[in-house]
Image (cartoon, rainbow, N blue to C red; front, side, top):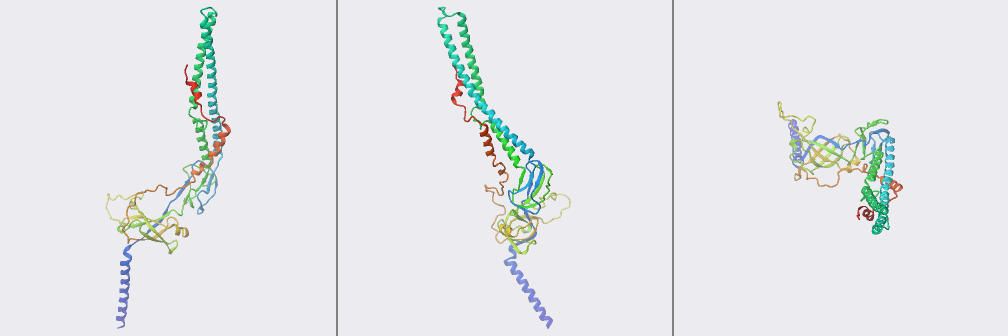
Length: 391
């Protein structure tokens, strides 16, 4: 009798548990897809130098947190400083050389005016002698000399005009500052200035330092890996779901995640950002060749990208490669499996570290220009006409 009563109680408990499980599945379980095959992923900023050189200082170590713009590595600046100061000298020389070109134009213009005056005098002398040569008031020799002097003055004026046009062609439609020689020298100064600043390598993003291999005294090139930075706010989860579970997964669905790093008490709530364009096997270094040999069906897994809330990440930061327990709520299946085309005009990620390398160079260039230029403006139209007008 007692055994029968115990069996009834046991059966009732089992039935109750079954009912509870069935109700949970009806109202909750069938609207959830779960996987343990999920890992934290994120951006890794692999830092290299923009110039070659010898490492003179290192300011960070692995596991340390650095901010964007913070100095991480310095290179020896000796060669770059020499090249930069040489470019400054070349700019000053170019400004003075172009200034001489402009001054030469006005010098030749004055010569043209002088030759024009001499030509007028030669014409008067010739016509005066031509008018009285028949009366014998002047000798034939004097008349021939006047005629020869007129022809020589005319040829001399033409030569002066050719020289003036040649000088104008070197500076026409420019000023000292916009002349190609000066602009080329300015670009060389900028190049030298930027290369000098590139000897100070700064963090392009904020994050944890990892894989630091750079050492003091090491000779590096632009291809030498120095270290990596892991931005803690640029992290997401790649959840690998079996293909048989992908039927109801849509972009925008709510996701709850836990990590063994903090335990089940810390729950990350995100959303499905996107579904990969292929299974994990397709993108492996050695993708399977199913068309050859004996074929055995293996259930494939599709990576699903899930967002992580930045507010929770700031309090409970994760690390790349950590495993996650991911549950996707598939109750709402109205979302898309393929995202809308990208329409954003702003970059997703950006840094101003590299654009700041040129800051301050304009002040240096302006100083060099003011110290060396003595001619401001363009060639006047009056001077241009001197080189082109004909008698």
